[in-house]
Image (cartoon, rainbow, N blue to C red):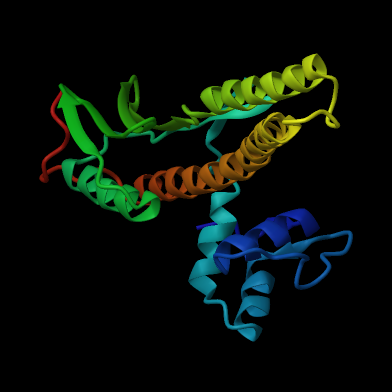
Length: 235
């Protein structure tokens, strides 16, 4: 449970209701003021707008369960996204199986499951979910990269360069037969612009999905100690 006496500021309130409602929340439903609002007050506000108290509680607790973020960049753009979180204990085989089901649903991909000792992996192309052993149990790491982006950049730049070079060599857009060269340059510029503009949106989507999954698993493992009886992942 979240601390009953903790008070949340405006930014935290907006984040809590965004997570609790599973959608974007433009502004806080109520200003916190200088002293902030308690969890009980946030749950009362949530009831008024149809958000379950349990959802508000989970969202509030998730503020204290933050995965470590990692980003790989190419030409200043986010080419890869990674989220890692320590679970504090070993993940059971049943919990791993439920995680695989969630990964398939969220990313809409069947993927491939593999294992080696206590290491578990779910892979779908460049998208990976890794359960790795640590001194205290396991950590969950989700990572992916936009593997086709460098190729798109090279193709776009190449077509743009060839089209512009051909136009300059032939004397500009006014010469006879300039249309194919002009179309090549325009197509290259459009291809380059489309790939560049779509990349940040892709990175934000993947980062949000990964944060939701890692936070949920960490909250679940923190709330329930590992069962003694059921099958733990083998050492």
